[in-house]
Amino acid sequence: MSKYVLILDLDGVLITSPSWKSDELDSDGYSKFNENCVRNLNQLLSKYDFEIWLSSTRRTVKKIGEFNEIFSRRNIITPIVGFVPNYLNCKTRRNEIEKFVKEYQISRYLIVDDDKSLNGLESEQKTNLILTEFHKGFDSEKLEQAIQIMEVLATKNSIQILVFNIKHPKHGIFKKRHQERREVDYKSIWRIGQGVGLFCEKRRIY
Image (cartoon, rainbow, N blue to C red; front, top):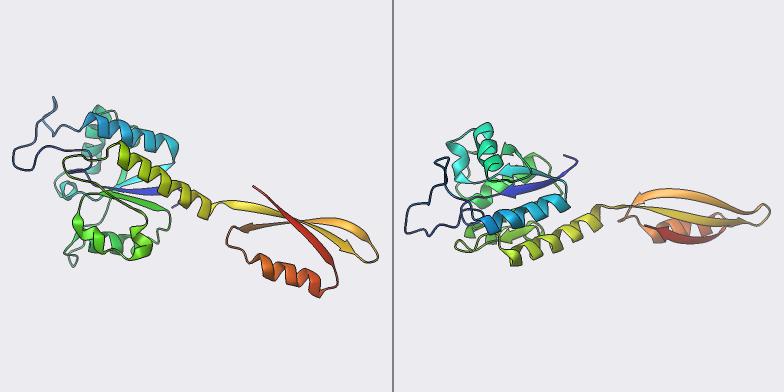
């Protein structure tokens, strides 16, 4: 998966009807989405290139095409591409998402959900979690938190170019371009340059 993955719940994220009463229905007969939450979601979707994977329990009663019609009528700008699998041996949302991330080998993802079982995610996964409140949903505060998480993810996965100015004792200065992920071990590269008797000057171009 080359895009970011958005693991998205509905109830408590986009649908914020009080739990003690039936959902308010829209003109198409499906639950109304909170317009402010939809607006915030669209801001996030317009800023980052996401694939949406639905984690809501509602995924068990409708097909992807039906949900995309619902999304389109509510002006959500990015369609759903898939459902988090309904694993028979998973008892909680946390278990489902942990298995989904591992099975699909997903490294660039954001979880937006109100399910409290997600508090039990491992620390590395929990840093990618926006845990909403049922009656507030994906409000402006959660949007800000989501953007902060995405900025960190973007930094971790960016590619940078290292430019080495290498001075050979006999042949003067020449340049060598080397492209690596941000996590590259710069000290090791520096030692290699020194080990072959060269003077290396490096700088980063972002």
